[in-house]
Length: 476
Image 1 (cartoon, rainbow, N blue to C red):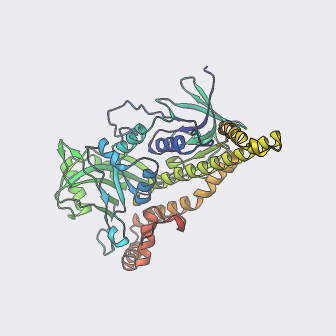
Image 2 (cartoon, rainbow, N blue to C red):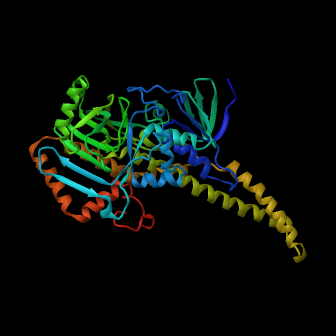
């Protein structure tokens, strides 16, 4: 067995959340103001894989599309991931923005229309290919160690570190372990993090379509008897035909048995069923891509921190795709963790510099004015040495850090999970009083500017942002 390599942070899971986190920690957290944290990213997926799978979602070939809330777009940019770079990963075109949103309830009067210009913002968010975004993040830096494909067979928490064992026989020790594995590995249980699972008994069918009419940057959330149906503006290529502003990515949520029946239909029969559910808002559906599906459940870690360990993204909470909040909530997890570590590292460096200065003064005693310049130069030299020492002794997995992370994520997690779960249970329920209630709510929301404003704040990601950090506009 190889000797264990020691690093500040080990991240398990090379999807978009883990990849962005590795980049941000290695580049933005500098305990000694001279070098970033040492970070190792471990992923079970093979980055060289090029064949797409509709069953196993490799982050580098994942066919799914995600809607990035406005705050998510802003925070990715602050981490050095400008979405202009996604154009190079996807047909050379910039990701479509969402400027208009229509929420409707099939067969009922409930209708809500949102226009980004009403809130003095360019867009509510952007729609991107998940695989393109992951590749952009993975190729944006070489500042961390990347080990893949590799599976973690065991993790063990020690008092001063966490040991990580790989299937290759390699082992590592780390001050802080971050689980960004989507919760699929079972490692959370090894570190004492328990999870609750609430099965929705629904399946999400994901695919792309071309429509007769252009999308004009409009997204739809339509509630049907079979489940929510989301259309997100996204131009793809289907059957060697490229969309020209008339493409959408679709997430159709239905009961699991109904999903099996729908996926067994011929393409023409499937288009007919889709058209019946969605209507003709975009004219006829011209073509549909291959279908992929995955079961839906609310999975929630009962705590997001354990000894020298934190969980982020889908490892912390896996949400229903309704309202598109899952990834955006996960990115806020890592944004909070980066901020906490950055502030802690800077404070540590400052305290170390002060302590070092006191040691210098104590050892040298009082100096004459003629020696001030010489002593100042010596002090600068010693400070540099102190900074290196500070970097070596900064504890990224200290209890104060992991607990601060846990506390900082509580309200945002609880509120977003409650919002998503309530929407699922309300809009998937055909009990007549519930149907009436939700339509009244939609109509009321459409006529109450302050309520719409609050809804926009939360869905754009700014609902939990301190007032001093919000944009000075109506939405945020």
